[in-house]
Image 1 (cartoon, rainbow, N blue to C red):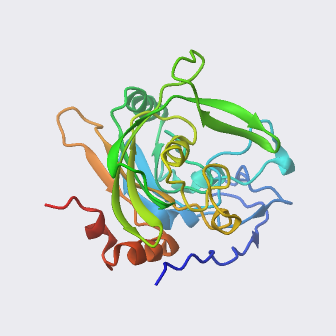
Image 2: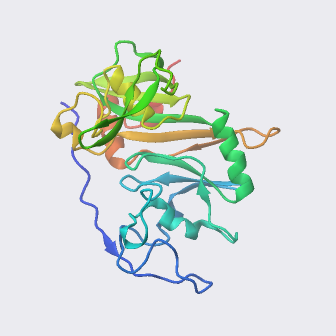
Length: 283
C-alpha cells in the first residue's frame, strides 16, 4: 500500500490586536490591523532547550523566521520574530536568530539570548562547528544510497521569482556547497533521507537532493515533482543540532520530533512505528 500523501489541515488564522507587555509597552510586530496565526506566547510550548546563552525552539511550518526585507508596518508580513519577546525570561532584550530556516522547514532553530551569546553562536556557525542533521521525505532515491554532494550553488532568476541552482564547477561567482546524506529507507517510490549540510547556503539541501534525483516532497521549486506532490507540505525537518558552546564541556545536542504529518509518512516508508529507531545507524 502506497504511503498516503495528504495535505495538512487548513491553518486557522486568529485576529490579535496590539497588546501590552508587563512594562506597558506595545509589542512590536503585532499592530492593530495585522492578521496573525498564533497567540503571543505560543513559542513557549515549542522550547526544546534553554540555558544562559541560547534557546532552541521547534520551528513550525508556514512561518518565515523574519519579515520580508524592506517591508514595514501593516505591509510587514508576520514572522517568527514577532513572537520572540515572550522568550526573554527576564533578560532586557529578546533573543535573536543565530541562523535561519526556510519558511516551510520545521525543527531545531537556535536563538542567541543576548549580543555576546549571539556573537559566539555566529562564530560557531561561520567556522562550521555546529552540526546540523535534517530528515527529508523524497520522491525517488539517489543512485548511491549514501555519499557527499559537492556542488556549488548560485542564485538565478525565473519568471515568477528567484531560485538557487547548481553552478558550473569553474564558475568563480558560485558559492561552494557540500551536503552528506544517507538513504534510511525506501518504499513505493519514496525515500526517507538523512542529510547533513556542511555549508549553509540558501536552499542547499533542497537543491542538492533534487540534483541527485531525490527532490523533497512539497518543494515548490526544485526537482521533478507532480503538481500534487508540490502541493504537499514541505517534508524537510531540522531533526538535530549539536552545539559546542563550551570548550571544556560536552557539546549540547538537541533534537526535535518531526511534525505528525511527516512522521506518519516516515512510518509508512520505514514500516516502523518508532521512526527514531528507523533513523539510527544499523549495527
